[in-house]
Amino acid sequence: IFDSVRIADGTDFGDAFDEDAVNRMVWGSIRIVFVDCETAILTYQSDIEGFGGGQLEPVRLTSLQNLGCVIPGPANVAAAGWRTVNSNGPLLSLFPAARLDDAIYVAGGFRDDGFFSTNEFWRYLPASNTWTRMQDMPGNRDDGMLVGFEGSVYFFGGLISEGAEGTAQDNNWRYDPETNQWTVLTPMLTPRGAGGAVVIGRHIYVAGGDANATVQRYSPAEDSWEAFDVNDPVPRNQSSSVVFRGEIWTLGGRDTLGTVNNRVYIFDPITGEGRAGPSMNAGRSGSIVAAIGDRIIVAGGENFAFGTIVNSTEVYDPETDSWQPGPSMPIGVHGTDGVVFDGEVFVPLGNTLVTGVDNTSQVQVLELPSS
Image 1 (cartoon, rainbow, N blue to C red):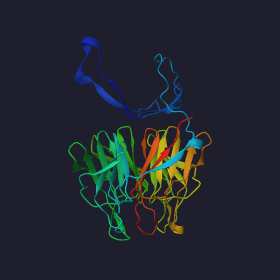
Image 2: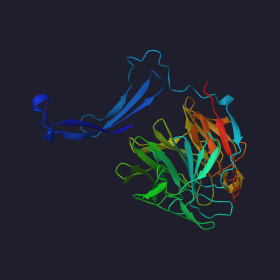
Image 3: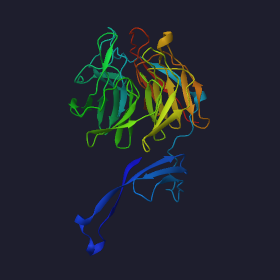
Image 4: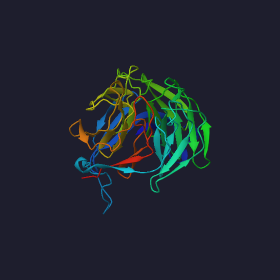
């Protein structure tokens, strides 16, 4: 994603060059989607009159000798399987999780003592299967949005819950693992909880949740926000979001009465527009979602209206534009996230109840080998 392509004029080359005369203009944006190692689709949109927008298909002209294709092959869903890791982790759920370098971080949520937000912040190392409590967050939150970006972890919004009711917040906090300290940054434009945060290019996007009328985009470099109106008519409380082929997919969620849905909304950050995506086979809220190679994985979640935990897994196949069944989770959970490590999806902790809190200290891992 090149979201700010620039061109320059106003001077000449050589001895005639005048740095003060250079006029740098924003030309527009470019997105390149690599279908495989030989094929790509380039979409462009210019802000300058006369260029407009369109689509090109670049042709590969050369390659380095003996350099193999680094794009993974199609996932072998038939060979996929789950395993459970007895991690003795903290008893938390209703939290976001995110990867930064070789670690998974989980922030806030509920403990086993009920629906009360906590400010606990934990780091899990998959390589050693160890948990470490880091510096607590500046405030108690559950159902926040978390993402790793350029050496830091960012936590957005979430709810302050004291019992059954929670109030959405607009906070923006950055955690520095080098100093083990939090910094308070410019808050979101509007409060939001129970949604998702993703990274595309130089920006972080928050989508879905209990404030799904907009997608908000944050620039860490400028510590500033902007909002895009969306035309998604589906309630997205407890929804999940993931980046797939340069777009933001928001899956499932529920309304204020607890009715869940199986519908998908796709937001294009280049055009600022959205569209309906292929519906999942099962309605889910608080589900686990991750993208691996050319597949999207969704698993777990809850069906609040029926008081059940969903333990099924679905895999999105772009070739058929449909969701295919995958292996069921060993432990059905909701209120956690999926984090990708080396072709596997790690699911830390989570809640096994719908109307109560019963947190598991386990880590579940989905292995999805390539064909």
